[in-house]
Length: 165
Image (cartoon, rainbow, N blue to C red; front, side, top):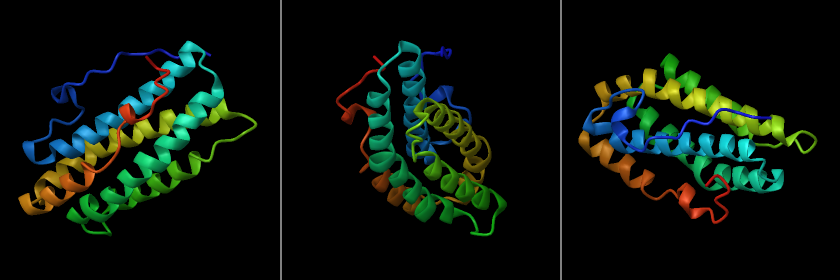
C-alpha cells in the first residue's frame, strides 16, 4: 500500500492555528505528534517490516502519547470548563485513540492506518478549535506548569530504530 508522504516542516509558523507565544510549547508537542503520524506513513511507503512499526507505535503510545494526553487532560483542558463541548469531544477522542493503539495482530496494517489518520485529525481539531479557546483562558503561571510537564516527555528521537529516515 502506498501513501503519499509530505516532508514535514519543523517551523512552528506553518502550524494550522497561529498560536500566540503563550501556547508555543503545546503547539510544538502537537507538531511532534504529527511527525509520529508522518513516520507511520513513511514506514508504510518504504515497506518497512510490520513488527518494527508496531514496536514503534506501541512505544510511542506508552511513553509519549498517553502521557501527553494526561498532561492535556489535567492541565491544558483545565483552562476550560470540564463541561465545555470541546473538552468533552477531546476526551472522547483520547479514549478512542487509546483503544486504537491496541494493535490488531491479525491486521496490523489496518490498525496503523487508523491510528495515523485518527491521530492526525485529532491534532488538527485541537489546534484549530481548542487552541483559540485556551489562548483566551490561559495565564502565564498555568502555562509555565504545562510547559514544565511537556518538557519531561520523550520525543521520536529517543526511539533508536528510526525506520522513517
